[in-house]
Image (tube, rainbow, N blue to C red):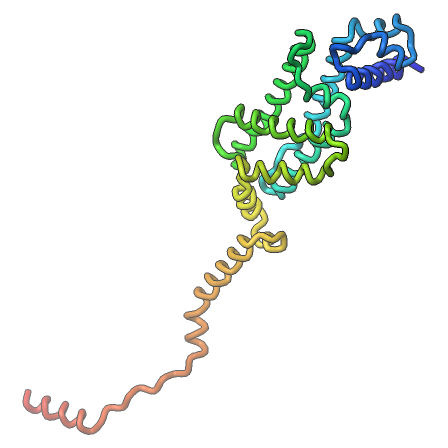
Length: 261
Protein backbone atom coordinates (compact mmCIF):
# COMPACT_ATOMS: atom_id res chain seq x y z
CA UNK A 1 0.00 0.00 0.00
CA UNK A 2 1.54 3.32 -1.06
CA UNK A 3 1.17 6.62 0.80
CA UNK A 4 -1.82 7.80 -1.17
CA UNK A 5 -3.68 4.55 -0.64
CA UNK A 6 -2.85 4.53 3.08
CA UNK A 7 -4.14 8.10 3.41
CA UNK A 8 -7.38 7.19 1.70
CA UNK A 9 -7.74 4.13 3.94
CA UNK A 10 -7.40 6.35 7.01
CA UNK A 11 -10.01 8.78 5.63
CA UNK A 12 -12.46 5.95 4.96
CA UNK A 13 -11.92 4.52 8.41
CA UNK A 14 -12.36 7.93 10.02
CA UNK A 15 -15.62 8.50 8.12
CA UNK A 16 -17.00 5.20 9.39
CA UNK A 17 -15.88 5.74 12.98
CA UNK A 18 -17.30 9.27 13.05
CA UNK A 19 -20.66 8.07 11.73
CA UNK A 20 -20.89 5.19 14.19
CA UNK A 21 -19.63 6.92 17.35
CA UNK A 22 -20.07 10.59 16.56
CA UNK A 23 -17.26 13.08 16.40
CA UNK A 24 -16.99 13.59 20.15
CA UNK A 25 -16.75 9.90 21.08
CA UNK A 26 -14.52 8.89 18.17
CA UNK A 27 -10.86 8.27 19.03
CA UNK A 28 -7.73 8.02 16.93
CA UNK A 29 -7.31 4.50 18.31
CA UNK A 30 -10.67 3.55 16.76
CA UNK A 31 -9.60 4.94 13.38
CA UNK A 32 -6.24 3.19 13.22
CA UNK A 33 -7.78 -0.09 14.42
CA UNK A 34 -10.32 -0.01 11.61
CA UNK A 35 -7.69 1.04 9.06
CA UNK A 36 -5.35 -1.67 10.38
CA UNK A 37 -2.34 0.62 10.71
CA UNK A 38 -0.13 1.65 13.61
CA UNK A 39 -1.10 4.73 15.59
CA UNK A 40 2.16 6.39 14.61
CA UNK A 41 1.19 5.98 10.96
CA UNK A 42 -1.93 8.07 11.54
CA UNK A 43 0.17 10.99 12.80
CA UNK A 44 2.31 10.88 9.68
CA UNK A 45 -0.73 12.10 7.78
CA UNK A 46 -2.90 13.95 10.29
CA UNK A 47 -1.99 15.86 13.47
CA UNK A 48 -5.28 14.98 15.21
CA UNK A 49 -8.82 13.76 14.59
CA UNK A 50 -10.01 17.31 13.99
CA UNK A 51 -7.77 17.60 10.95
CA UNK A 52 -8.95 14.32 9.45
CA UNK A 53 -12.55 15.40 9.99
CA UNK A 54 -11.79 18.74 8.34
CA UNK A 55 -10.39 17.00 5.29
CA UNK A 56 -13.47 14.84 5.00
CA UNK A 57 -15.65 17.94 5.12
CA UNK A 58 -13.50 19.74 2.53
CA UNK A 59 -13.79 16.78 0.18
CA UNK A 60 -17.56 16.73 0.50
CA UNK A 61 -17.77 20.46 -0.13
CA UNK A 62 -15.61 20.14 -3.24
CA UNK A 63 -17.91 17.47 -4.59
CA UNK A 64 -20.94 19.67 -3.94
CA UNK A 65 -19.32 22.58 -5.76
CA UNK A 66 -18.45 20.39 -8.71
CA UNK A 67 -21.98 18.98 -8.89
CA UNK A 68 -23.67 22.35 -9.49
CA UNK A 69 -23.83 23.42 -13.13
CA UNK A 70 -24.37 26.98 -14.28
CA UNK A 71 -27.90 27.34 -15.66
CA UNK A 72 -28.26 28.42 -19.29
CA UNK A 73 -31.64 30.25 -19.62
CA UNK A 74 -31.75 29.65 -23.39
CA UNK A 75 -31.84 25.88 -22.82
CA UNK A 76 -34.25 23.72 -20.82
CA UNK A 77 -34.15 25.52 -17.47
CA UNK A 78 -36.36 23.02 -15.66
CA UNK A 79 -34.12 20.12 -16.66
CA UNK A 80 -31.00 22.01 -15.55
CA UNK A 81 -32.46 22.96 -12.16
CA UNK A 82 -33.57 19.38 -11.56
CA UNK A 83 -30.11 18.19 -12.58
CA UNK A 84 -28.52 20.42 -9.95
CA UNK A 85 -30.92 19.28 -7.25
CA UNK A 86 -30.37 15.65 -8.26
CA UNK A 87 -26.58 16.09 -8.20
CA UNK A 88 -26.57 17.71 -4.74
CA UNK A 89 -28.85 15.01 -3.31
CA UNK A 90 -26.63 12.32 -4.86
CA UNK A 91 -23.43 13.76 -3.33
CA UNK A 92 -24.99 13.82 0.12
CA UNK A 93 -26.73 10.45 -0.07
CA UNK A 94 -23.68 8.75 -1.58
CA UNK A 95 -21.77 9.67 1.58
CA UNK A 96 -24.35 8.88 4.29
CA UNK A 97 -21.79 8.55 7.05
CA UNK A 98 -20.41 12.07 6.69
CA UNK A 99 -23.79 13.55 5.82
CA UNK A 100 -25.29 12.20 9.03
CA UNK A 101 -22.49 13.88 11.00
CA UNK A 102 -22.91 17.23 9.25
CA UNK A 103 -26.69 17.18 9.68
CA UNK A 104 -26.56 16.19 13.34
CA UNK A 105 -27.09 18.66 16.13
CA UNK A 106 -23.85 19.87 17.64
CA UNK A 107 -25.17 21.10 20.97
CA UNK A 108 -23.10 19.95 23.93
CA UNK A 109 -20.16 18.75 21.84
CA UNK A 110 -16.67 20.21 21.87
CA UNK A 111 -16.17 23.69 20.40
CA UNK A 112 -13.76 22.49 17.71
CA UNK A 113 -16.40 20.19 16.25
CA UNK A 114 -19.06 22.91 16.39
CA UNK A 115 -16.68 25.28 14.62
CA UNK A 116 -16.05 22.77 11.84
CA UNK A 117 -19.77 22.23 11.33
CA UNK A 118 -20.52 25.94 11.23
CA UNK A 119 -17.71 26.58 8.76
CA UNK A 120 -19.01 23.85 6.45
CA UNK A 121 -22.58 25.10 6.59
CA UNK A 122 -21.46 28.66 5.94
CA UNK A 123 -19.48 27.56 2.89
CA UNK A 124 -22.46 25.65 1.53
CA UNK A 125 -24.71 28.63 2.18
CA UNK A 126 -22.32 31.00 0.40
CA UNK A 127 -22.11 28.63 -2.57
CA UNK A 128 -25.90 28.55 -2.82
CA UNK A 129 -26.16 32.34 -2.40
CA UNK A 130 -23.82 32.84 -5.34
CA UNK A 131 -25.89 30.47 -7.46
CA UNK A 132 -29.09 32.29 -6.50
CA UNK A 133 -27.57 35.69 -7.26
CA UNK A 134 -26.56 34.42 -10.70
CA UNK A 135 -30.11 33.12 -11.16
CA UNK A 136 -31.49 36.58 -10.33
CA UNK A 137 -29.20 38.11 -12.94
CA UNK A 138 -30.52 35.62 -15.50
CA UNK A 139 -34.12 36.30 -14.50
CA UNK A 140 -34.96 32.80 -13.27
CA UNK A 141 -34.89 33.64 -9.54
CA UNK A 142 -37.31 36.09 -7.93
CA UNK A 143 -35.75 39.32 -6.65
CA UNK A 144 -35.16 39.14 -2.92
CA UNK A 145 -32.70 38.35 -0.13
CA UNK A 146 -30.49 35.53 -1.45
CA UNK A 147 -29.16 34.85 2.05
CA UNK A 148 -32.66 34.06 3.31
CA UNK A 149 -33.45 32.08 0.17
CA UNK A 150 -30.31 30.01 0.79
CA UNK A 151 -31.26 29.47 4.44
CA UNK A 152 -34.75 28.27 3.51
CA UNK A 153 -33.39 25.92 0.86
CA UNK A 154 -30.69 24.40 3.05
CA UNK A 155 -33.19 23.97 5.87
CA UNK A 156 -35.59 22.06 3.64
CA UNK A 157 -32.82 19.91 2.18
CA UNK A 158 -31.34 19.23 5.60
CA UNK A 159 -34.61 18.05 7.11
CA UNK A 160 -35.45 15.85 4.13
CA UNK A 161 -32.03 14.15 4.15
CA UNK A 162 -31.87 13.87 7.93
CA UNK A 163 -35.31 12.29 8.06
CA UNK A 164 -34.37 10.03 5.18
CA UNK A 165 -31.29 8.84 7.09
CA UNK A 166 -33.44 7.90 10.10
CA UNK A 167 -36.08 5.99 8.12
CA UNK A 168 -35.80 2.21 7.94
CA UNK A 169 -36.65 2.39 4.25
CA UNK A 170 -35.19 5.43 2.54
CA UNK A 171 -37.29 7.39 0.06
CA UNK A 172 -36.38 7.05 -3.62
CA UNK A 173 -33.96 9.76 -4.69
CA UNK A 174 -36.06 10.92 -7.61
CA UNK A 175 -39.02 11.41 -5.30
CA UNK A 176 -36.88 13.72 -3.14
CA UNK A 177 -35.68 15.60 -6.22
CA UNK A 178 -39.21 16.11 -7.53
CA UNK A 179 -40.54 17.24 -4.15
CA UNK A 180 -37.72 19.76 -3.66
CA UNK A 181 -38.16 21.09 -7.18
CA UNK A 182 -41.92 21.52 -6.69
CA UNK A 183 -41.27 23.37 -3.43
CA UNK A 184 -38.77 25.75 -5.05
CA UNK A 185 -41.04 26.30 -8.05
CA UNK A 186 -43.76 27.52 -5.72
CA UNK A 187 -41.18 29.76 -4.05
CA UNK A 188 -38.46 31.77 -5.75
CA UNK A 189 -38.06 29.92 -9.06
CA UNK A 190 -39.36 31.84 -12.12
CA UNK A 191 -39.84 29.08 -14.65
CA UNK A 192 -41.99 31.30 -16.86
CA UNK A 193 -38.99 33.56 -17.43
CA UNK A 194 -36.82 30.56 -18.27
CA UNK A 195 -39.36 29.27 -20.77
CA UNK A 196 -39.73 32.72 -22.33
CA UNK A 197 -35.96 32.99 -22.77
CA UNK A 198 -35.84 29.52 -24.26
CA UNK A 199 -38.65 30.31 -26.69
CA UNK A 200 -36.98 33.58 -27.73
CA UNK A 201 -33.78 31.77 -28.59
CA UNK A 202 -35.36 28.83 -30.39
CA UNK A 203 -37.98 30.71 -32.42
CA UNK A 204 -40.11 28.39 -34.52
CA UNK A 205 -38.42 25.31 -33.10
CA UNK A 206 -40.10 26.02 -29.78
CA UNK A 207 -43.22 24.15 -30.85
CA UNK A 208 -41.31 20.90 -31.14
CA UNK A 209 -40.20 21.33 -27.55
CA UNK A 210 -43.75 22.02 -26.41
CA UNK A 211 -43.42 25.83 -26.47
CA UNK A 212 -46.64 27.45 -27.63
CA UNK A 213 -44.77 30.72 -28.09
CA UNK A 214 -43.05 29.31 -31.18
CA UNK A 215 -46.37 28.41 -32.78
CA UNK A 216 -47.82 31.83 -31.97
CA UNK A 217 -44.88 33.60 -33.54
CA UNK A 218 -45.11 31.52 -36.72
CA UNK A 219 -48.86 32.15 -36.95
CA UNK A 220 -48.31 35.86 -36.51
CA UNK A 221 -45.64 35.90 -39.23
CA UNK A 222 -47.96 33.99 -41.55
CA UNK A 223 -50.82 36.40 -40.90
CA UNK A 224 -48.59 39.40 -41.61
CA UNK A 225 -47.38 37.80 -44.83
CA UNK A 226 -50.96 37.04 -45.85
CA UNK A 227 -52.03 40.63 -45.27
CA UNK A 228 -49.11 41.98 -47.27
CA UNK A 229 -49.88 39.73 -50.25
CA UNK A 230 -53.66 40.25 -50.17
CA UNK A 231 -53.95 43.51 -52.25
CA UNK A 232 -51.92 42.16 -55.20
CA UNK A 233 -53.68 38.81 -55.13
CA UNK A 234 -57.10 40.46 -55.01
CA UNK A 235 -56.26 42.70 -57.95
CA UNK A 236 -55.05 39.76 -60.02
CA UNK A 237 -57.90 37.40 -59.26
CA UNK A 238 -61.01 39.63 -58.98
CA UNK A 239 -63.07 39.90 -62.25
CA UNK A 240 -63.49 43.34 -63.75
CA UNK A 241 -66.89 44.77 -62.79
CA UNK A 242 -68.97 46.36 -65.64
CA UNK A 243 -69.50 50.09 -65.45
CA UNK A 244 -73.16 51.17 -65.16
CA UNK A 245 -74.55 52.61 -68.45
CA UNK A 246 -76.21 56.00 -68.50
CA UNK A 247 -79.87 55.90 -69.58
CA UNK A 248 -81.49 58.11 -72.32
CA UNK A 249 -83.24 60.21 -69.74
CA UNK A 250 -79.95 61.19 -68.23
CA UNK A 251 -78.52 62.25 -71.65
CA UNK A 252 -81.63 64.31 -72.49
CA UNK A 253 -81.45 66.18 -69.24
CA UNK A 254 -77.79 66.95 -69.87
CA UNK A 255 -78.57 68.44 -73.33
CA UNK A 256 -81.45 70.52 -72.02
CA UNK A 257 -79.28 71.95 -69.30
CA UNK A 258 -76.56 72.82 -71.87
CA UNK A 259 -79.10 74.76 -74.05
CA UNK A 260 -80.48 76.64 -71.09
CA UNK A 261 -76.97 77.76 -70.19
